[in-house]
Length: 308
Image 1 (cartoon, rainbow, N blue to C red):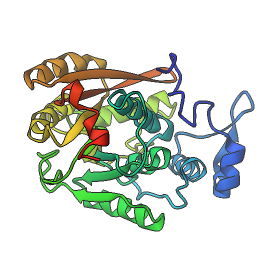
Image 2: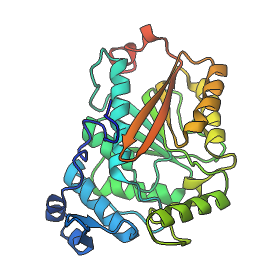
Image 3: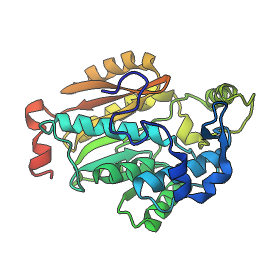
């Protein structure tokens, strides 16, 4: 477990950004660097182009991704926090595998809402060698993810979710067996709420009010009817149909207050086990929930049995 305010111990970004190393890998980043009040190199995180260039440098320097770009207006994810989720998922899988982190392409991960950036498959494959299947309802996002995979010669399976009301239905095929599923769900309940959240973020960054989003984001990435709880409730409901095809189902939960209702929803689903894993990132604490229908005595079979 990370100490308060710190990234996961295995996170490559735990000491912050090494701009000299990043600029050496992606010289274009130099144009966006600036000294902060204490004289350290940084970038203007209010500048979407600068954030995208930083991500490109991070992915190339730390995760061997030679090409990375996303279309304008798609969500540009903060890499260190996203990678933390991957590392804690590795710990979760280790807890079902005699405390050994499972590595290699026999470990199957399902990324719900992979987005234009494909950030989880890119970093997860680099760190642990897992095989990822990414799904999304947005054709533009999948086209971008496909281009990233092709130009980096990466084997990542991409599937379009044809029905927005579905999460697992239609993308988990009869012969699939996953060790882990992951999701960063849309957390706002409406476009109006998403817009207010964006304005708060701009104010926190000292930019005043703006309709722009510094990290971008399509509507489907940011909000859905009923917000986060409704989305995860639907995920839990549909997960029951695939109880034997995925060892651990997981989802990020943006608001701590949402844990109590989700606890009740999972209790009704009669899961075999349920965990809340907290992750610290600077001043912010994030978390994900994990649930499984597989009894503890059976979980190791996913690593050395017929699912391998």
